[in-house]
Length: 308
Ligand code: NAP
Image (cartoon, rainbow, N blue to C red; front, side, top):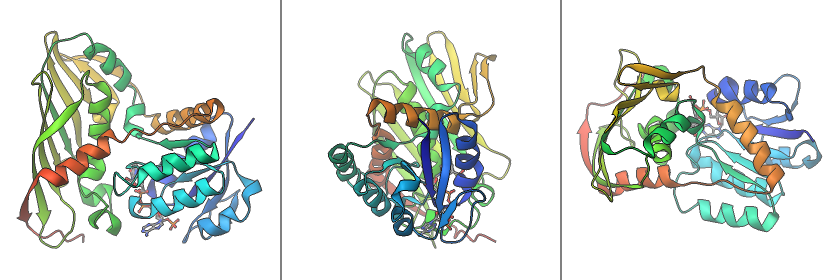
């Protein structure tokens, strides 16, 4: 049976990834969109999620592609209406707002899928399998990009709950928490806030695991010489690097995986599988680490960020 999806929030990620990926995946179809500002060809268009939900026969599931600060209310509405819900990352603006959504999904017997798109990158599962049997010596995460290039005009990202540089940084944490064999916990956090903004532009983090493994992370939005989205793991069998956001896996210079991006097709296949199996998938670990980074963070005030 075809899974009929309605997208809420027709912004960058909805246009770049959700719409084309839904079109590419067999058994999944886009039938409606709720957008305050835009229309999508070939489907029913609504201005708000309330109007969308007034025509429930049009769709089975809602993909929430809105900023984290407004997604909770939308998820409550969609789950209450008995619809399956896909949450873009991060799953919420706070950690504790997710438990009521999980409970409501159980009560309504529908699927809640908190997506971490980077976990669907091709190098992630091979990296996990490689690391499970190895001695690990250290891990270094470098996740740097130009905020002006990747988040132009996104005012919400600088507001409380928008996460600032953790919006991309949480992708690195979603990969690290998927590939490392033991759970890690934060031990230090240095956060750089532009003097005119409520969210950090850079962060330096340190984690450990129960074996004493040292994990360091550098997140920076002030990179203007291209992107660096890499995780390097020093092991007893050499240096394993998950590179380019998870597209490539390299062991001591030898390329083990190098495949094009298919993250969102993987997400929609998984969503359909979860619905067919009557299950949910909600892992809050990356968001908990970001919350810890704010809890333990030493705040540094840096130069104002001016977009233009
Ligand atoms: P965006 O371009 O700003 O789009 C968000 C859309 O949400 C807006 O275009 C708007 O759509 C809708 N919206 C509803 N209420 C809003 C409000 N109060 N303020 C702003 N927008 C509101 O953002 P995005 O990059 O698509 O990111 C959306 C989510 O996807 C974020 O959680 C982000 O972390 C995640 N994500 C983004 C990327 C990426 O590369 N950009 C990658 C992966 C995940 P309408 O005008 O249609 O109502």
